[in-house]
Image 1 (spheres, rainbow, N blue to C red):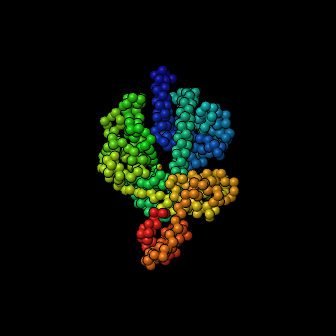
Image 2: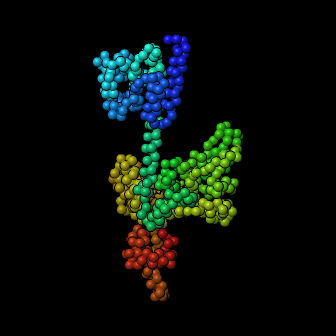
Length: 511
Ligand SMILES: Nc1ncnc2c1ncn2[C@@H]1O[C@H](COP(=O)(O)OP(=O)(O)OP(=O)(O)O)[C@@H](O)[C@H]1O
Ligand SMILES: [Mg+2]
């Protein structure tokens, strides 16, 4: 071969290798990239057919992952076991093989059936290897003519291409695994914040669920209000995972956890050098939440300065990193929560009124547990089952213990109830949790209604009736575990009438 031709050939080879390395990373689709690589090889190097076989670690079979010059049917037929045929031998030995004329090689199985005329075709097969592990085989058909040059050149080029493919296949495996893990975590999260895991049948709680479902699929700003432990964060996550943003991120920020200047950088990010200690550019939570939801917990703690910045995000849907004036678009759904009375804070002047109205578009109030006592047994059942499963136990709560738990006022709400049950179940070495197992702090502060004062001789008939009625109502409430609609039924009056009397006789102050 003349020198000029040789240089041209080397250039073509180099071009082919570069092009293969480019197409291999062109998309996240393994087969598509490998097919383009085979096509590139055949176009640029004048090879007739090209195949990438990958080893399936489970079936230990070689399967064609991508090919050029074969029909789909031929691809499907091309399966080899380790050691079988030329391809199978390459995977077994981990070394390349060259068959000068497949027509004269009995080991050549032509399993794809793609070569009716075998004569005159050479076959080159090289292992796809990474760090000593053979992942598959790359093979090409070639009709050798004078100007093609030697087999050694082909083996060298194919060896380089095979090592590029090996790196790509490995990377792709890692990528796919991490995607699968992400997807499985996502579906676990989705399950966790699925409605069956949110317990509450009481009227008050069902009203909450109804609002959640109504607003989940809108981008409206939601303000969650309620005492500590009533489920504000749980509902915030549920809102996100029930919404069309469920595949996007859910980012939670506790506004009380950081001092003002750090919180600002945490929320909006900061450019390098924006303040002492900002040694590199920092992405803020709003940016992280793009396409998803941001949950601003304890929003009542936000400083006046940050209240102004948040207002701007809500009004203009843009923000800037600290130390930058470039506006960034915020495609984020905002969910906030507080256990403070924001309206009061507005009156006191510690919370901006305009921000309050922006946040208060859809307020959802989570009722405290003592206002929905009928949910207590359901929550106890739910958590008993969960902790029994987690700690491989089979503990139940006795009726007496249940009654005591229902008469407690639960200042820490569901969190307190769940924590206490977990402790009881871990500590219990009996099958049943009895009244005596319930902590003293709970049994001693029972919401027991005071006995009604005895009727004095002087009292009029009217007051006698009143006190009789009051007594009957209290008794019915006690007997029905403070579930108002049941008590009303027992008394033969409507829940509305009962509600009215509870207020009138100030019984609500004792519930
Ligand atoms: N309806 C419910 N069903 C099941 N579990 C619940 C329910 N409500 C709350 N919980 C559980 O109670 C615990 C406290 O809930 P969460 O953290 O959402 O309360 P919170 O209102 O954000 O409290 P805080 O104001 O103290 O931050 C969590 O473990 C949560 O899963
Ligand atoms: Mg919370």
